[in-house]
Length: 242
Image 1: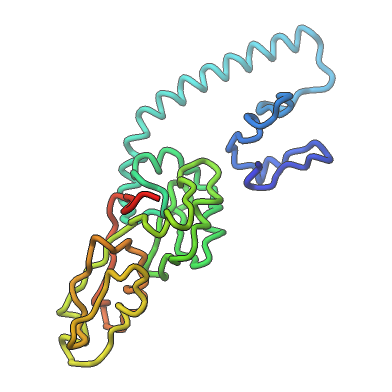
Image 2: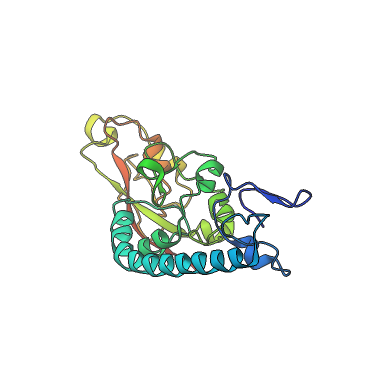
């Protein structure tokens, strides 16, 4: 249940330095034994306890009110911040929704085999995909399975393979087949969905956007200087239900 593994059931302790405040433990514990708040003092009189309760309660209420105001004012900024990232991990869906739920816990970053999920600058903000580092593996759905907040919807491998995260675009002016007459076809050979195909001459056809999911495999393998085929982010969608 604890995504960061910070709970020691035997000792009855929580490592607050590792805790990401996902609150899963609060909803899971039937006995309500897990609570968040200030450490209690052992030697404390009844009056002191009441005073501390009132003070802490006032702080909590004030904090909630301030947090609500900041949330209303800040969500728009957070959404704008998310839009600046052109490509989001599979399962993110709407950029605003993803920005509101991503806590920057970096579990997806740590579990991505291709190491293409990157944190926001300074680590404060939603993660994104950097397909200049590599491609999103067609046979991997790890990031959506480890996300503790639902910012990335849990996708089956079949659903992930049909989720469009970006679109590839061919620029014939940079393609070595068109410009230099060299044989290549590497982009078509690695496309897992058949969105990139070749003409009889060996030159690639325009990308079939109905099949392209934007995994970046074609961009990664393209040998042309400047990359003749590149991927651009879009609003995510599932091509086929299932």
